Figure 1: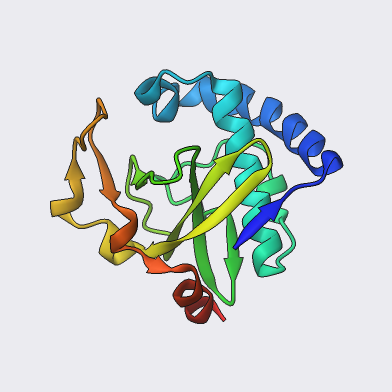
Figure 2: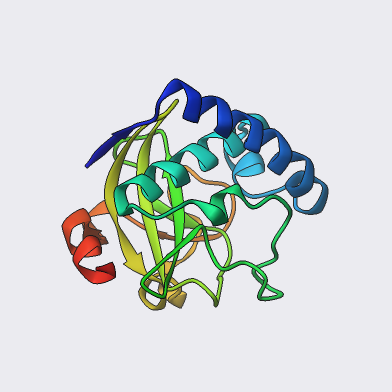
Length: 169
């Protein structure tokens, strides 16, 4: 399942990314920015764009994507990136087509974590994993090619895109 955002949607995401960066980096300057040596602008922009793309796949209004301000998972303030039929979903993205699903911290409010691959407004929905399966101690560590501990799963371990859609609908 591939989604291509329009130029207007990309511009909106760029604007939201700037606002997110201001709030998020002031509170939490680590995660993907530190892990991969990526620019905060890139991380925020790709995050917003992939979240919007997944909202389009599920036909859900992206009110949580449009929300600005830091939400702490540890304080129970982060309900993920969208909610579909009562299922709280966290959208993760990587530009690497064979990249893994990665989460740097457990979020007890999230039910499902999904993986989008791509960049610059063109994303492929790969699949996902229920949080109870993702947040297992054996998934916690430093995967090959990474510098810090995280929960991770390779694509072959994920529910397929169809299985995820069947699960949430």
